[in-house]
Length: 329
Image 1: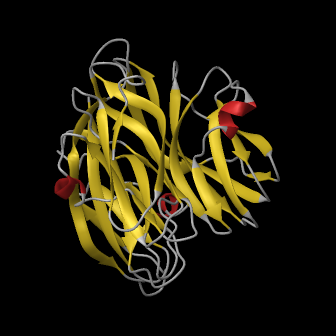
Image 2: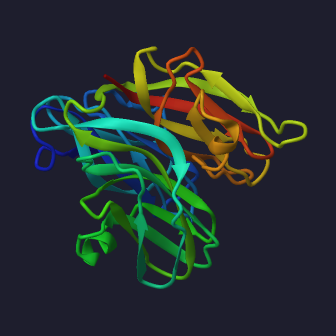
């Protein structure tokens, strides 16, 4: 399937930030968005969403765009309904914003939301002039099949209810969101049905041009595969460091997939130099035994050879990382 975004994304855009949701899934499958100019076989070498029958699932992606501003959505097996929510785009034209990454940190605000209820996550240490935040939303204690949305505090509630950031079927789920912020330096989170507990991990901010780093988009590239993370003796976690982007990069946009999971767990991805305890206080992917799970990340890298650190909480998992782009000053 090819989607024309020329009516939404302006000329000169090099990549787009989209939330891809799969529903009505008939078979276990994976899907991936790519530039329309990329052939089906090339698109099939990476994945963005891993889906199962009876379970709607969403994930944020940063696919590269060609001059035609069209996206190819590849589905591997069976039939799915694919929905795209465009949340932003990257461009070299003015006016534009830069990205200022921070070490992943869990926000102090924890929300408990019931049916059709929303709450505000107040974000600390926002850089001057910031226009949007990169923030991971995790829901836990979910007692119904629901969807959760993140939107600006000042936006009408219909803005939240008309899109989704993540979908949960009574399980812990996380997804990255890019949400505009204003002087209130907060975001609104909406829950559709039942009760959920909401946690938020901040990974960076979009700031005025010239104050941060610029995005370099790349074709979807699998750069890390079949790297087994097994439970470490004593602390239940291990880490693997590797360099996924040029050494001058300050942040990376990628998709991390956890496969072959033996236990319900969480995986944290952090800059290689971040302190261990601070890293495991956040989460990137929440895998379940026997089910592949993917999640986007927009995260700082350190300037040493290590690049990124991967930590699994318990059990064992196989990690795949698909690079979408990186940021340089």
